[in-house]
Image (spheres, rainbow, N blue to C red):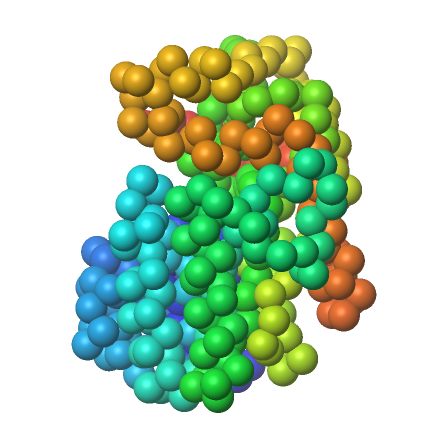
Length: 313
């Protein structure tokens, strides 16, 4: 048990998983979200307010030794909302003298024509979401290099797991699998793809917080060896006890549906992830911290059981 306060901004799937891990080991935790309400373990403080307001963010971070940034603005508004949100939480962490642990994805790299993603690849994204993520990562590492505060970044692939409703491998796949209906997947389901398990992501963020050697760098968080999306979905249906059924959403379909549906339109920039091999190399994290991803044959059935226990509302 430690008396050092860890403050987690964001109570989505990853933030809540990190909160549970910290609380289980006896670390004092403060959860921060907009509403001030969340289903958290006993003893976890929940504080509500607008994290993009520097005054509130600073108050929420008071006394923290580690600040985790797991907030996620509306997908369509990332370029406008995400950088100032990050800047607010970063300033708050600096004011408290805390280490800053950022939850990030892999958008900044852009398409790689199927080459494996490693941490030494340049950030070459040209789309609005990818370039926003690249700029934000550069800002964080610049803040670390300047001595403003200690920063580390955890980067994960498309995730799945408990509470992972809105991901590519979320409610559009797991609920249909349980019901014996047709799942919807993006792009070409016969391309290999690395998927990240939410509890592994959260555990890895806590690992980054605990280790000084993680500071000043971005790390690919552990994911199981890549298999095709079709094989991944087959495993989901097998765990659910049903025969697999897939509807693949092609780029043409996204273009047509996007005319009428803004949420679908937002998917176009990142569709390349599912049209070519998307292979994430997490070996640097694994070898440095002696950590490994949960095998898919354990993680997928556990996720099926979570979705079964939490039916659609």
